[in-house]
Image (cartoon, rainbow over all chains, first blue to last red; front, side):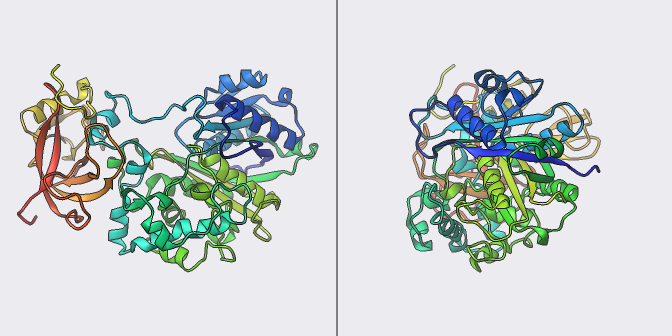
Length: 382
Length: 139
């Protein structure tokens, strides 16, 4: 397969993150987009491709003043932005466009206007007929459903699940932009309000406002621009099911495994080449599934790997160094923020900077283990 | 339509009609592929494994075991939290989402792999949903 030679030339989040009641969702997209173009040293008129999820890409293009001849509206949940990167790279390399702007904005907390939320589903859909009738109200009691099976099959105590937000809070404490910064303990996590057993409040992400944007272009064009390029060595995507009850194996995501295999295969790197890892964590179990399904841990071993502080500050595989969706921010579709932190780490400008990050992997989930996207970022071209 | 529940009401589609007609008659109707032998759910008029359109409707035993679940503490129309939302594995193989009923909604009682049997909850004239309760007999 052809080696990828497209780069991220611009990357930025919204000027504010957290609670932004004076910006509508479309304006959050635009604020992030203008910040990312500024980072790249490009103008709106330099953009010929637009990709977004959660809003119609034409809405964003028109609002910004872009006349796109390449459009990607893939919207399959929070990992859609990883897929946009993959699609952008392929399209740029095949000459369909030269400079793609990928935007995300979500008024998840202030709800200006309330985001379209895929739950409750249409009553005539398969989700509406075969899942919604049983009282689930969204991700907290659907995306969490596989966990008891995982914990039971691998004999993992609840304390290990509670350790995930505890360690990510250590990273968040180093990040002034994090929504939650106060240290927490396993006991506090387990004693926090019960949401959907076994998940307590501190095992679930907050809902916040924010956005982020990326500018992807060719290596050649990037050489003439002031932005600091980050190479995209490989990317993958996959989908499994919109019905979590039909997920093949409740202890492992087929979509995670397939997406990661594509990305690592394309990049031609091994797991031990990875210096830094972002694992989309709307809930505490996702980094556990991520570590195992991406091949960083054997099945059932990720809880111990986390407990032994391998993913913590000072550990051999720093994970979710912005604090993650659990502590940093979570607007609803978090994938963009995972990539922003990967890019900051590769550029060497993160709040909790890990020394010498050459390669960072950002891995996302869409829906209820419905879809997955993975992007491998690098300081060097290969 | 006489609505008897404030719980979520599905809308039946042509491909799922046999299933909902079955639950109204207290039958758990699955589908079986005549080409490859797979018993499957949710409904569709072809086999999800081999795409054969040679399929038949079969009546499931109604026996299952508990595959995984959560106990929701969130407000949900028609439900009184805490209540279980579960995925069960039918003895014929397929899995489905449901509620475990007629037992305390606690982790001590809801043990993975416990044997279950189907019961039916009528929500309107045309919608009856399959729920599951603990089955004394050990599977």
